[in-house]
Image (cartoon, rainbow, N blue to C red; front, side):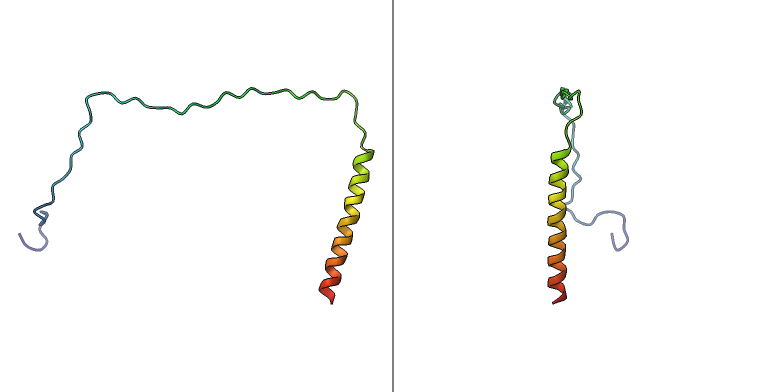
Length: 76
């Protein structure tokens, strides 16, 4: 046996053959937890938005102040 031969030259190399066990294997399927959809009660009358508008306006003012401060720092 020389170069280019199809036979492996390593005398210690033996192919490994895995035999399946005689007992059938059980396939485990992951269980998904059951989810119960919860209904959230909805108010029948429209809620007041006045407080939200005040908070939004206040946040908007803070954003304008923050943007002004940032741009004035960049200008220096």
